[in-house]
Length: 235
Image (cartoon, rainbow, N blue to C red):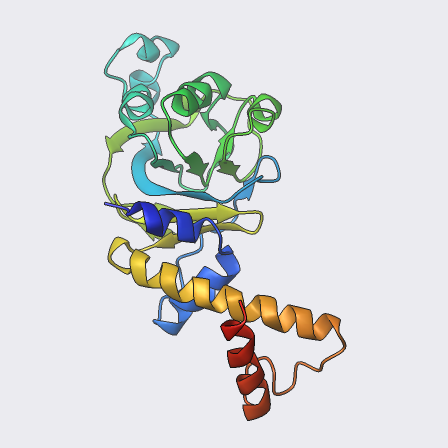
């Protein structure tokens, strides 16, 4: 379970900083590749992963009437994704058909989800972009998902944009993309990334004043290290 203080901390750090913290731990493939936000985020998306997996559609199983089935797994994913979670859709990096559209995303938002991510595409993309909801995809896609996607599993481990996503992993998204934090590392990554952000803000201020990055970033000059410690004491 994602702690409220961890959620709040992760909302204040960048995906770039999180990526570095994960890299320090040997985790190189936690960025969901090829996805961008439909509109510039006003704040970071943070939530635990709730997953939906698609396989290639088979014509006899995916007529348009398939959506009349109240148990259709795409619809069930929308209706059961927990409040505060991020719905993550494995569309096999295939954006030739939509992973979802504006009506389903609206329902997800109204149920309190933190966001939605697919390595495929969304239809009604302009409408979704105007909603102010955290939504990430590869590109817009008009065709209905039934033409290429068959919803096969909810809340199983998936791959999304070449990143492994396990249910309960913590997703953080900003203008640069989406990172996947293994659930057991979320607290320590939040703490470390917060400290890294403080240092990076300090470095940015010094560089704007004309300082060289040499010896400052990374901090190999003891004098800069001392000045940073003094800076922290005065916060």
